[in-house]
Image 1 (cartoon, rainbow, N blue to C red):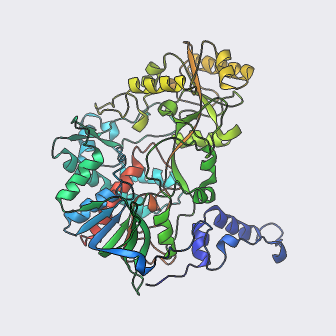
Image 2 (spheres, one colour):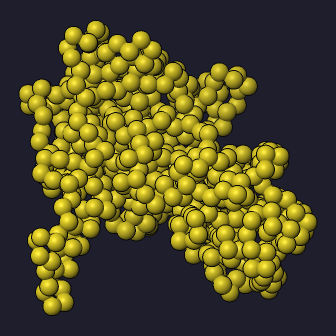
Image 3 (cartoon, one colour):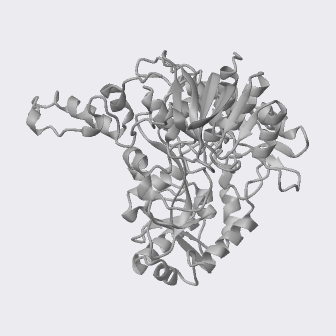
Length: 573
């Protein structure tokens, strides 16, 4: 087994802000009067010293041969039975490869059901009646690149645009074969001819469950098909490390049974596909790569498989390089009680209603941005406010207002324009809100003065903000932050509602940079043979933040590339 040394340059590229700071310092030395900091005054960055990486990288785990008590041979091994791993396993099995997929949890988690794609047969059918939902690939690709400030691999974005429609059609054939599901294109863009600053894209696709059988879910329907094609799924089996031969080719992994803790060598003659899910629960990595999201983040119950970055770290130890900046999917769907503020150490509750663009004020009682922007814009504006926390404000007519606001994607509370069902109906959301009222999160009041007191924000300032907002809404123009007029709705019907809000953290989406064959590459663009990386372990597609107005883009990329990795690992061009 060989070990590839990690160069200082590789980890300057992968360490994010630290690397950017080092580069900036070098450039500044050549500006102005040419002043250079004396070497004795330059701080030493021990994290990126020669042959060392970030502190969170650690050493490759050491497992004694005597501790490996089981050996499994397969052709294609998929590590992670989730949004990326399931399509990979199915595609590899369809191509005729002996396929094994492993998962450290005891069952499939909640598979993402908003899948972003362009030119699926479902979208093309919708366009016959709603031509406004047509997506120009060139324009869409350029918007994704622009959103990432260019920190992307253009070829990867183009690859998703070209292959995602076929992936949706393939998934549709699978889940519709037994009549248990119907795949829908989510036909709505919400912003057409409204003067909105931000364009929404009708990329979303979701499977609607048609059976009442509680044992059938989207994930189980897919894995059942995978089993029909010969794929094997093994749970309670966690990834420990990659194994390579003398040429540096990945030949398999060491895994461990999470129940009796015995070690397993799994040999994969054709390839290993890593889909372990990012690093959102690795606090050290999070603080290093995207500390700003740690300040916005509120801990809530949810799924996600407890991703700790093991797949990413394993690739980096073989010489792969990582995205220069951290990136995550964050939604303004978490809340805290009126005596609490957002932070990664704070525990709160899920607040689905938070993405509706009602009045939002900071903890000083002042409005501070256009509430109608993308989720991440709202949250990033909040990062510039006291304690990275704000208050959502709505009134008794909120259900009708939400329908008028015509949101898109997973936060939509009413059926889509083409009849596609939304994720959660308004009646269910009202039940969620009532639960938050009962538990002391959402506050209810008959006057804005009383609401401010209950939210622990300055009464006089909030009342002034509240009245000014209503005046602009009645006049039909937001002269402060330019929200679309149809979303500027007076809050004039008590009772009034309010809650302190922050970020629900879904997943990290930066990772190891890959080529279009889904292989991780080193600084010289050389691929690590025998290894494929998909989903939130992979990079090159997003930067800083997630463009949520491309509904389902993260999930669509993961499934499209997972399918591609499975075919390539199995030897199918």
